[in-house]
Image 1 (tube, one colour):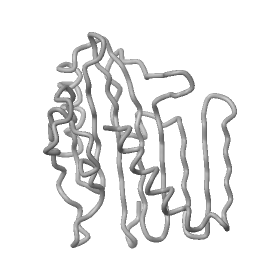
Image 2 (cartoon, one colour):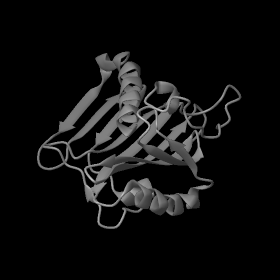
Image 3 (cartoon, rainbow, N blue to C red):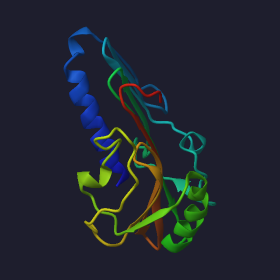
Length: 194
């Protein structure tokens, strides 16, 4: 789920930025441990960082969990797109623990309560409609929902907040333990601050 979310944000960013690339500045810093990119145009900016913290996401790390690292991929991203028309901010970090998905789910149900009612979606799907971000036609945030597509049926998503500002934890069984990602998403329309 979280990879699809970042992919959707990246495609929106790419489409928005392609229009104005003729007059932009691009700064890529891939030295050392962190990979950072800044694209600035007269119409907006795209910032990508690979070092978000759980504090920035607003969720704690499950006790004993280790951040997933696969080669150079730290399985973490902070993507921020801003313009006068819209804004999207997505922060995600992926982890692994030897504990069962049930224990991870119980832990995050408690942690997510500070953001409102917690929605539990079984067998998270991987359709783009699962990632309906932002506002309805009245420019009001929408309540979060579960997708009708149950995907592989093994994973669980916990969500709290509204469509324009929410926290999500995606949990999947993996190697007698659990893979999970903590996610924060915020969007804004033309006249809203982020």
